[in-house]
Image (cartoon, rainbow, N blue to C red; front, side):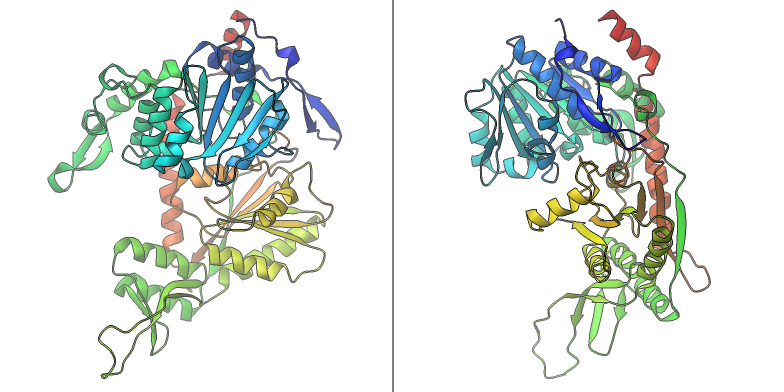
Length: 524
């Protein structure tokens, strides 16, 4: 197929001098588009910010012009849905050059674009299509002339989940499929199984991985142990090699440093927040006794190990969840009703963050800061504190907020809409860490971290993507005891490092070097 990239829309980009210029189609984008056009099922694993969505949109238009498809269904996480649909700032608005009708399939169906357009786009999210009736309605629009796009495809890494099963049903009806994910393996190689299974339509023994089930996949490639040998102890090196080889023909992965002229990521800086003797005593109680008494009547319990780990992380951030009043009255009802609440118990990390922000503000009166926290109460307290400051624009991105509040926060750090003067946007990790362009900021701080490598990498790359003109700095805040004792924060950072090393090892085999994909481009 002849791919005429001259018809592609040119995207406005702010250069290093602060001027707006039009950016042409990058070479790596041309290679990705060619792969999508020539293969009915393909996985784009380019690093976050390497223009994966642009490749899909351009390829879909070429396929439409060749009379191969007439509809594209995009399934994305709920927080990423506006990244595709938004008629003003969305990716489709940037890259469409032919008339298209775009619909958002959610509780309320919204549409934009000319009604008479032959190319149709449907944008929905994974959670929404889990419900049977909604899925059945969407299946009516799937046929051999439909291209299915699964954005942030790690959402289907669980082989038993309803959304994975729903996506597999969609895939079997659609003639073409594209998976997009900059972090396809965020925990272990098992993350790839369901993504590969959906990619090839569940062909099992004759599919990409050549296995009948996840259990066969696991038995072949991992060393099992634990109770009844049902737990994965480690992944066999030869198993990882086989996974790499089987996936290679269907995968394209490029790193930003090889295909985009972006400023560097600076090495992360770690700030320490020293816990007071009182807060350290609370931390030790939860660590050693699985329970904290905050007064004679109130306590927080963590009978399960996973709950204790979460409570310890909460304590280092200055609050404690699951706090309830316990009756000490002998005549009390055997089943007293208690209301669990979140209680603030310290502000060590908050004070360190505010001191750090004041120092950055002295250096740059127009600084734009992006903050990422694991816990919602941590974000709410930070935002409330910063809103007291005059002349500072403050926003938050979290689940369950009003759309207007979310849009305000996005506009604060979008380079096309950012206001003059300083701005600070606080994000709950996982609620707004995918698909967003927040490159008006080049300063990132993480008051607390999640064990999820995917959330961390996705969040970090919201500011390191096309449009960024400054080197990006990253800062972590880690709590320590009064004498410098390590806390759960250190364990989380260590675990994230190990996960990153394993993911890099596996996906590293799929990284296409510039010399390779430039040869592909020349051949085309």
